[in-house]
Image (tube, rainbow, N blue to C red; front, side):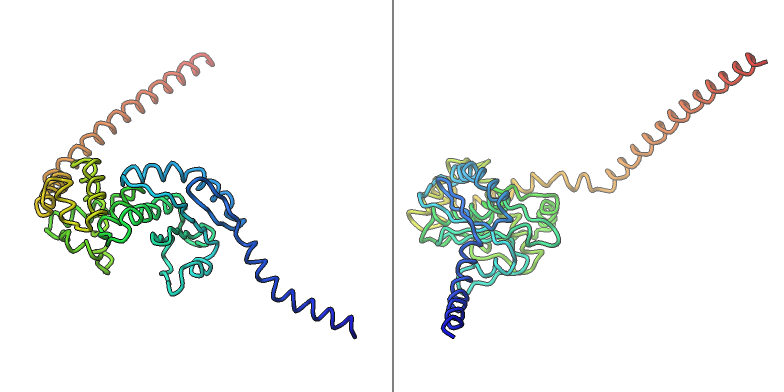
Length: 312
């Protein structure tokens, strides 16, 4: 009887200890000068790749923002969608399509493992670039409200999230006068999918415009001014030398210049001209192919006649 009681007691202890030990063993840790990466055994390769690239990525992003911070950033690679939701701070629930999230106030990035996706793909490094950009700008402007166009536009600019679809959305808005005013994009993005896509595209181009056309130094000054004063319009004016309305007008002119070639290419005259060129090219190519074929037949016929003569 005492032996049986001892076994029951030990089994009860295991029931309490085992889950904690399993949870502790579920995640492994990889660390460098600036990052602590937590991952499960199945994501060891991805974690190593991320650790190897993380310092270079960090250097580029901090270089664009112009303000550094010292604390190490924690990165969690969640192995399943269930674990991804569980790893979020209490009370936070993300949509099923979310692949990564950043919490600047916690200096924390959480990314879904590619193994958690049955359809499509997740590029962990690309998501990391996007999310660390949020971390960096959030830490630089700690205590200040980060304009949405700045946060999302810079994240897209850093991770090179530009494609033909976004260009088409932006071009259509320019040609139809459907652009969203910059002031609207300061507080939030539209909920409707098409309008949200336009908001992201505009934010990307606006950040690109400031960095590449106004100047990287001006962008750094804007971030430093805003971090000190908390006044968005004043910070932009001091950094660029223009009030926000004038800056937006110059940006719109830049947009129209970038998209002005679309109507020319899309016009009926241009399309007919292109079609004519294609037809002429196809005609001469077909004639050339026919001449080559006729020459081949003539050569084959000549060989056949020579062979027949020799055989006779």
